[in-house]
Length: 313
Length: 289
Image 1 (cartoon, rainbow over the protein chains, first blue to last red):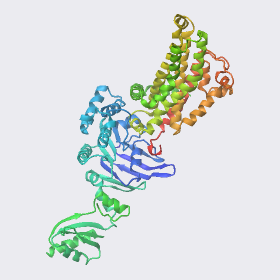
Image 2 (image 1 turned 90 degrees about the horizontal axis):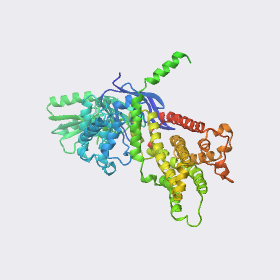
Image 3 (image 1 turned 90 degrees about the vertical axis):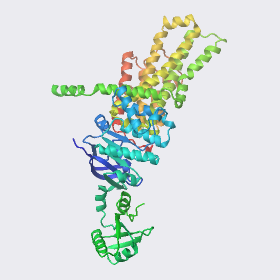
Image 4 (image 1 turned 120 degrees about the vertical axis):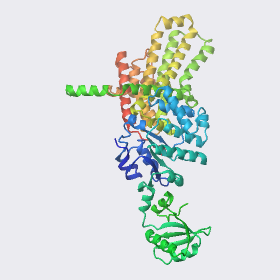
């Protein structure tokens, strides 16, 4: 059996409106982030993955199983959607417990798993309250608990950090990381790029229904080598460094850092740039403390790919 | 079809996880019943069901002083209420409210996807919802019909009791309940299908209402596609109708009870098969709701 989530030339049109077009992906276990602006097709891709919608063309399979095989498929897949809605009148515990009963479980087993999931997302004390009285963050946690309660091997999370306070965000991210380490597929879509970037094994960048790049975050950066790389050089005399850098033709920009202890450099040829830095250090002209790529995160890469200048937030 | 193919098909059916599907079906029915049996939003359905019951109660309490009705008159009145009100209006619109809420209602409330993301076959999901809706409709409408029947004969005291237990009363009551059950299931299946086919099933329901009213004067072949046709043959008492009401009471060729019941159930089953097929391809796209 395959251990991958596979999209084979998948397109989805809503009438004449494009959802996603010609998506071919093969996602291995680990944490994968879907990144893109609103309307880029992230949710469509997740809904296709779980059979909530059907592809207009192409096929989708998760671990070798198609969504049409509901029993096999949904025993191993958990999907936390971004729809902030619940069945009428349920408590948090009932919401999770009821979904487990549909797996054909005994009441005792379902009850134990429901309790475990609610405690895991830190919703234990409020489990017996009606969901209608929950805060947005609590509702988000309830949906998360429901999606992980049956111990899926594939967890799909659509904007899972929405509505969570900073503490809950950190806890959720830690949970996703833990699940990823356990060998699970965790597919996350989020606008909070900095956070998902930190925990992701790979990213899938989307815009306008197309996948514009995918892979390890650093591999993706390689795909945009024609864009100038931005590097922050921490040093004692940044103005001197900037003047030397301007003597070369591969550096297109040098900007002093606001604290006066560094310089942002944009270069078209990173290898030549590092050779230059070596020479400067060897000459004893400037004492360099640190060199950091300043646009190697998902946000900057995404901006590059959709035509921005890669200025990271 | 060869013998080998038939035995392979039977073996394939036997290999299906029937026990699991049965467990999931029971679970679905229990869940749906718990969530939807009593709901403030369904107040108008309760009103539809119990309005005649309340009127009969008020009549029993306050309306019997001036002139003494006879048992046969009240029997005819009850038959009229059942035929003209319950079957044509109460059960029809009651099931419209109950069954369209099962799929379309959950789409509007954006909660249907929880079922679609569970390890339950779409067909089992649809049948679970249908059974839960039928039980709810039958409980509501059956109780209302039973209440109306009891309140109609209670004021007659011993004569009413004799009519019900020693006369034709009990058989009439059972016929009313049978018709109620078949109507709930038949119209329920149709409205369940409508709710998957269109965003607003109300206009289609009105067209169906018209079709059910005129089906008795349609050619015999077309009558087979009407729930009312089968129910008409089961009515224990024929109410004489005049003018437009004649359309609702016309009795076509006599049909045995078993055939009418089998016909209604077959039509219901056929509609459910189409619904299952549609359910298999149903997509969740709340943004277009």
